[in-house]
Length: 420
Image (cartoon, rainbow, N blue to C red; front, side, top):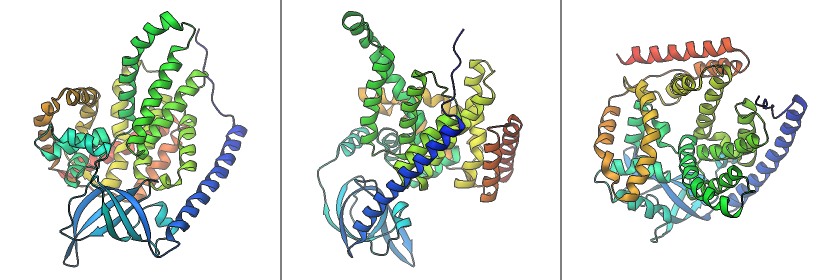
């Protein structure tokens, strides 16, 4: 008989954990405030940045370019440039910015700062070289941008963001736990036979699962650092490490405590993520997966495998509609696209390594075309708040899980009615 896994925290232990978390959060905010004061101490400051996005904007009959920038310490902000400013997407710049009017809240979220470009660095970063290698295998720049988003977390063009939002597959293009799970599985199965061969001959006393996991986690950590630690991927990596540690010690993994143990340390160490939409959407996806597995654990594994994607799609739909408002008749097919992506993602990596990265270009072009036929479905934020409350009560009551499904399915019917 298998031993039953135990919960991580008792009530008093959890309160102690929260007190410690509040102490660490206070210290993290103090460090952030010191960095903020250092940035705004003088009228101007010189910073090294990477250009995340570059696009034209017209306001008051004036057309100019907007640059979304990220510093080496993960500070994200916007600045403007002349209409004829050269293409610098993904390049590194040295800027003189004027942040005197930036508030501490702006500093923690995002802000706009006037600036002067001092240096446009010509040497290519490793990420730029990867993006160039990917682009060289595609004639269509939009399809190249899709793969760049998948491999190097490069932001998508606005038209692609809208198309994939209409199709309900934006989560597939933002590197997150889904991608990390696929990559860790690939690494595990590649390393396992090599490790088994060496273990049989040299160190049969070692714990193979622990050793392989440490190697896989180390490689993923390097990849995370290479991508500049996007919020959703950081959440996934921390949860992967915590999940393995809990599993190795016989503690229950499929538990809301596990999710809290992931979210709280990340937020107290990186308080800017309080304001990251990507982080909260990533955490919400895991929340609904756990909600299903907790209340429907009696189902056969095959049924769980088949029903989880449907359950997550339906329950995440209200968040998608309220936040993004994009919907099309093809939106529900994202369940199918998500399932196929499990095969497509590792295969696309292999094909690009072999020089045949354009194999799926025609299919992706058709998918982009489908996403062009979407409409806006506007729903007030009050509905999202009510839906979130129902979902949270669902942790303790299965009846509220069914109510969550009923409400989210009502959102789906309403969205379909609005576009037909």
